[in-house]
Length: 310
Length: 251
Image (cartoon, rainbow over the protein chains, first blue to last red):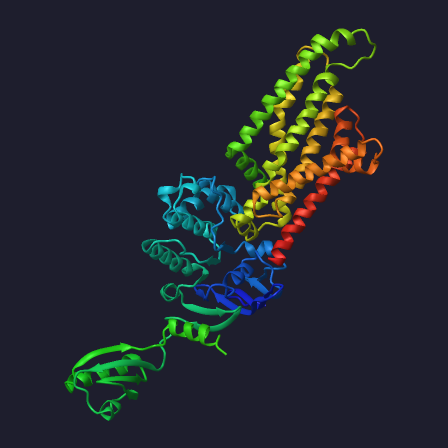
């Protein structure tokens, strides 16, 4: 199992508890450079999935391999390529940031001589310079969260698993962490869980929506230009619908109220240029033109809430 | 990897004021007791013992009682040292850090246990020095002294293993300490019941720590006593590993 460029492969992962199944038949193949967002309402099974992928909870069924090494059969070797931040950062409050990161680094397999440079590097990446000599118990929640992220990446693992990494951070810190995650993904693969939709749209290039322990939706984000694109068009002096339909590249036009149309074009870039120049030539009075792709929020609401209804 | 965790746990015990307070407090009490026993030996016992052939010396009358007191006092504080071991790791989700690292559960448990043993050795060394200081004034029975300290150390080490296991059962350190005190009381009751006239029980005495310790502290080195402590420790270490592994399997 596992091919050369897939970093993480999970097949048929399930976790049963006495009275319910927390996760059922979870599948994932993750490559270097991918940032996967795991979305779902509270209690959907996100944390359980991440705990299984990080080797801290054994699955009831299924197999996981990291870089082709079976996580259940050879945990020690597989875990060398793994960094994990649980939903609560695993901190020792009576240590300073430096001491703590040093211990985590050694624990994660960094040799003694290489630990000091690794600490300094990760302190810089996570902007912890100001607090590096302070006791963790004296830090604010935002800093504690960043120390938690630092311990997960100190050994530069190939696979980084972050359970709600931006919890407790202010907007500026959230942006910094998002930049950090994007940078990480250049060399590594990242899985992050969240229930904040905008977070996934902002940093991830792939999304899985989980509800009641099952994957209900999976898609790529922001990379592929869809073949057919919808636009919301608003005109001051609306022409006949047929006139717009006659334009080259326009596939369909649906007239809505008061000069509003929903149009679809075959090719986003070329089609749009034709439509806009036609609007100007014919003096239709352009008031608005905006892309109308199905947002993640719509998908989420549809997949999570509508499927719950009988 | 075991060494890493051992050093870490050892250092971390000294980061809290608890360890320092315990060592200082107990050493103060033991030093007082030592003085009381020594005073008693010099003023009361020595003149009378001088008349008897092959009479008990300073080792029997000063060091042995001090060791028995050291055993009682340390047993009473070990739950405070072991209660945090695993319950706090669970409380603050630090188990996730250990379990997602390339290290096995047995290494984690052994590392923590050895850290505790190292701490105990450090904590008992002032008491050992107190006892050895007597050698400046009198002839000591070194065999008895070594046997006594070995008994004390083995008893505390084996009880620490039990404390370590009990700390895996709860997220709350206080709960873990309560469980350890419960076990301590049980071992004590076993001993008392086993010794009580009319209901003597060799089994109960054997099951309890104290009989084995008292043998060693009076200089009687039976391999069965040493075996008891080793089995007790090993048993609880295995239980701890099992328990953590079942946490990983059952969530």
